[in-house]
Length: 190
Length: 421
Image 1 (cartoon, one colour):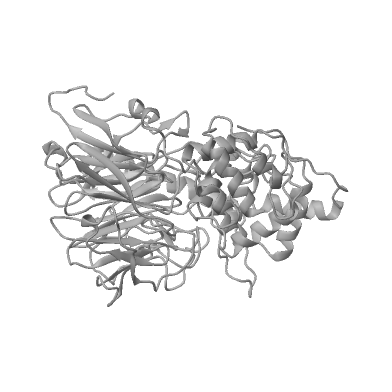
Image 2 (cartoon, one colour):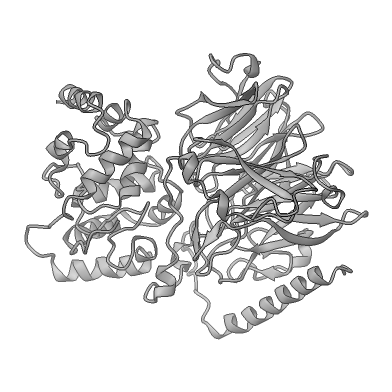
């Protein structure tokens, strides 16, 4: 699988298609806006700067998540930007499941307010520029990411998420991931 | 008190702001800690409520890591005093931050999230940007001594001997010191070798506002092999720039004030280390020399701590600084300090994002702090972020901008009265 993806990217890059790259290799795992793959984030409607920055960090080994490190390795900065622009143009993720349990949703909303998530991620938690959309993201990805920020296993552009996640309990992380995944994602942002 | 009216005015305004704030603080209930509660390690909950558009405008300054192409740099939007000229010295240094000149004129540039250390070389008037190290963990700090480049990552100092002879085939960095915390918050470092031949290494506070462990909120110095480590300053929240006064040989350093108290408090500081190992500069108990912390200041007085020699504005993110030693600049700029301000991220009306000049009098006192290189703020958006300044070998001034991944050069031409916009 990984070798196939790397090969597919290599072919795409060799074609020099930086203006409008084929993103089939991306959507194979990430889905057409909404990821159906466990542990793989949805990227539709994500701010392009955020995705470009993540690709940059994958390429430079600043964020570790195979196969993304290998896939980004041969890319130029222009490639990173072109792939990011193409995949974020897909529609924002749509949650298709049972609505959240009201008491748990309310508890998570209180935590979202307490930890001031909206002060960076925006009122609809849809992200902006280098800040990711978190509304509508996959639950297990959100939970794993918050846990990784808490232990500093993952570092962001700056350490704000490490500071924020440092004060979250495991139960709060689980509630936040549950509720954010079920939150309406809001409109796409440039 | 200063004789300079501008400086005096600034001081009075600061004092008025402190008093005004104190009045409003009393009106609010102070959050209570119950006995046995764990210490507050971070203060994210001190961020203001997010139900107003003004507060939602406090978005984090997470910016593109990729460098801006040379033809898109904001050069024509930047301003200098009359007679000074601005040009692009080098571009394409994604996330390029702290600078250090090598003996043979190589400019070494660290980075934070890019994980790279760059080298800018010049041959026959052509400049080239090379990457001499990559995949490092926030290698913000670069220092140089006797042909050896020192690199500071979050929890490791390493060296690359004879680097300038091996720029195209750089050796792997060799670790010299790693007794450092691993915290991401304020974990990136500015480093420099002092006139005493020792390496100076700060360890920032591991969060916005907290009682730091004994290992943090300090500046250390050590031999170049990482031995004989001393803590020379305490109560330093996070310094990302320092230099030695060429007259007194004392260490001067910037320090970033804490967040989320208010729009206008506290100021970033410019400090002087007069007695290595004996001074505490206030964090987290006292800010800006005259303002006890609303949470940790109780039971303390600012008189217990060393006050800054001047204030640099609230949330301006005052980082790299160098004494002005460049012979290429006019006499009026000989005795002072250039300070790079990265620009605020937690103030609704952004501040900083400029290079300022702190002018000293003959006794070494700061008499004014004036804007020097400005224009990085446009419609309350940052279009560039100065991180560090460096006097070049020819006496001009280099300025790094990590938002655009560029190094600018400021030079003076007495005949070009309006050379810059």
